[in-house]
Length: 540
Image 1 (spheres, rainbow, N blue to C red):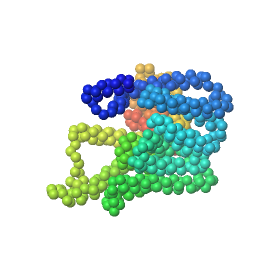
Image 2: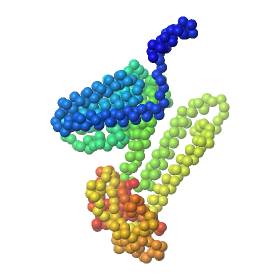
Image 3: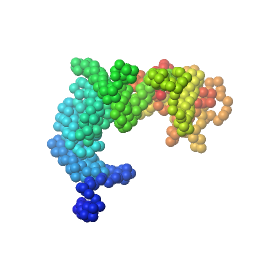
């Protein structure tokens, strides 16, 4: 093909139709859907090949063959390197090489942890060094991103085992900022530093947040140690997070030529202080803001999107774990939104004040300055209206539920035993009620949803009295709405949510307390023990 191109170029040159050297052959454009199918086919082929190899070398995992495991893993990584080098630009072979390399890395890690104690930091540091070498050597963007991420995780766990809790996340934040503020001077090494920068962002979100299996990595923070490093680590981490914020703000001020004495310079400093303070209250928020700020400052859309997702996710998690009622939570959200809008309007007013003062045309003062927005088309108005409707619907629902909790009739239902292995699942408790077994046989087959009639004793405990068919209720009776879902009977919910770390409080739960409306709608409110004492409120 190359010879034919050269011959054609020579003939055209002889006819004086062209001049100069033959142009370089441009890379053929491959549509994204074709690349996606090629990558999918590459993974299928790689999985079949790895399954075949695993059936042959499966004995390596059943016996103490650390050297053999590591050797075969290195061979797999070498084969992946050759695929990357010889098949540059091929999506199919690129994905095959990635799968083969991941298999080799797993073998190397398995061999290291068979060879060295898993509670020792040394195998984690050795694995981190191995991943760093792969990041530098392998000429593949996704491979470098993953190996850089794996290296940071191994390094984090190694520091964790040394008692340096939280220091790995702080080091990650500093490295993240150093990589991205020096992107202009590292252009020659872009194929290496760019995936490394993204892997640092992923690790930063994982170490300081609750995305991408972040909770298992944070478990070590709760293990108190007598080591001096355990006491110094929070202060060291705080100092390094502050250092990363200072480095980033310094580069932004230098890049955009903003004097510190100017109004914008002072606002930037105030923003940096707020980021640092938010990090002391909640490290997840500061990390997300740091990534978001880097994405905006250096026009990196992927970082901006990751920062937004991390910020929304952590705020949602933090809001969910607040030990307060839905009404208070809704007021917190509303107050936060109003405060952010006021800050936005205040900054807009301050920044436009000088411009309005120097304008030749008359203006209406503060109102025009604050609300001088660009004209909105119908689509924007429709989006705003839809958001307002959604917010109104959500808050109306919350208000109705809070009103039901405040004014509804109290009914207790006895809890039924469940499988102890599934009783406590994270921060919620799986519930079943004894009444479900009592009227399971009487539920009409044609009726999927309906109401059950219960008799109330002096302690407001409900006992099954039959299916409600519209008859008047007696004095000590109540009707409860039930739903049929996949053959199971549900009363409002089968889960009780509580604050993280409070599972032991609810181990003695005997009754579920419901607030019931006149039409039978019910809402799980509290759990009580066998003495009818309140153990805690539901935290949905």
